[in-house]
Amino acid sequence: MKILFASGEIFPFAKSGGLADVAGALPKALSSYVDISSVMPFYGFMDDLVAELFESFTLTIVRKKYKIEIYRKKEERSDIYFINAPHLSDTQKLYGDKTGDYKDNDLRFALFCRGVVRLAEILHVKLLHLNDWHTALCALYVKEQKLAVKTVFTIHNLAYQGIFDYASLGILGIKKRYFTMDGVEFYGKINLLKAGIAYSNAVTTVSPSYAKETLTQEFGCGLDGFLQHHKSKLQGILNGIDMVVFDPKHDTNLAVQYSQSEGKQKNKTALLRTSKLKDPKRPLFVMISRLVEQKGVDLLMESIADILKQHLNLYIIGEGPFAKELEKIAEGYDNFEFFNGYNEKLSHQLYAAADFLLMPSRFEPCGLSQLIAMRYGTVPIVHAVGGLKDSVHEKSKKCGQGIVFSKFNKKSMLLAVEKAMELLQDSKKHQEMIRFNMDCDFSFTKSAQKYLNIYQKI
Ligand code: ADP
Image (cartoon, rainbow, N blue to C red; front, side, top):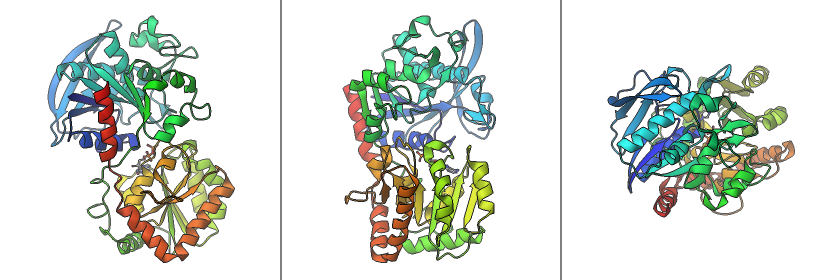
């Protein structure tokens, strides 16, 4: 079976979050069973990419001509294609800059989707695996062109839907017959994510709990009713991580590679040397996250003064709307360091150096940070929601042990931090937990089988 896997970002070429990690790891895991290639946009910042020109053609959308180029990078397990198109490839970021989302994202990703569908035809693929709204129009194009291609659409985060003004219908040349409640219409606007849900043969999301949550008003982001309608083709499959990319035994980002917890202490000492934080004996709590409400940053803000009163160090790395506020808070403490920005290397160093990862997400489709943390022997402290509920366990002996709080409020979160401090007093239990998590299989192996079952079924 020949498959094309399409995503707006793939690690290591472009990454804004977990989607890139998944789009890097899942096709690799699937490549043991099927012939699979991946495709992503060629962004303006990817100048040093070494890839050969594979195909070029001119597209006409509403009387405007666009020159599209497809580049190919041959990889050991599965080839990766890059779509170079006007608008799409003109930007220095993926989806937007400090001023907000790029205004022409509708056209950018429509051109991407046109390129993807053309590539699917050239490669004679039987199945297109689409990810998030950036790729959702592919499902509409496949239907419209009556192509013999099946589509699987994976929702990585229902909060991002690709909503545009009605005028975009004309810009993208989408026929009016798709502008219905069953199609892309959404309160008078266009919702591209809906195209992925409506026109794909199967819809998945990234954890079983989130699949259930998306059907409720609380988590459905206005699409719960729509998803209820398509419930029979919806399934939740838990994400995994690339166990080679995230491997403390061989991670060259680290001061010291390790397989035992002693190695963590050395990484902590090395990290603190380059930071204002002192005393490596203090437990180190970290948060590695986009700084948005979804990640519970507002709850953290409420609790941070109480957390920092304790005998611990806190290190947060992230970017987003809460960054300025956190920067200010950090100025007032010698046990709180904040790094404003995105830094892959530093994030690995933090996973390795930390004792605990804070992940108080308000909602979490799956979350990868907690999996990476456990792989590096860092105990996650999570709110019991979505994929966090499915991957971190406190009461059962399942793989993935951590501290789980069920109520999204300050009291519960502070209690969880207290529990973490108590765990440190019981060194035997703590070390056992670290060892147990470091031996767990968080790879995509099991979940790849579930995707294969869907591919076979449709
Ligand atoms: P998201 O909702 O952002 O996709 P996930 O937990 O699924 O959250 O994945 C986040 C990924 O991005 C992880 O690999 C995490 O280590 C990484 N990450 C998040 N913020 C940063 C940052 N500021 N610098 C480096 N890596 C980050």
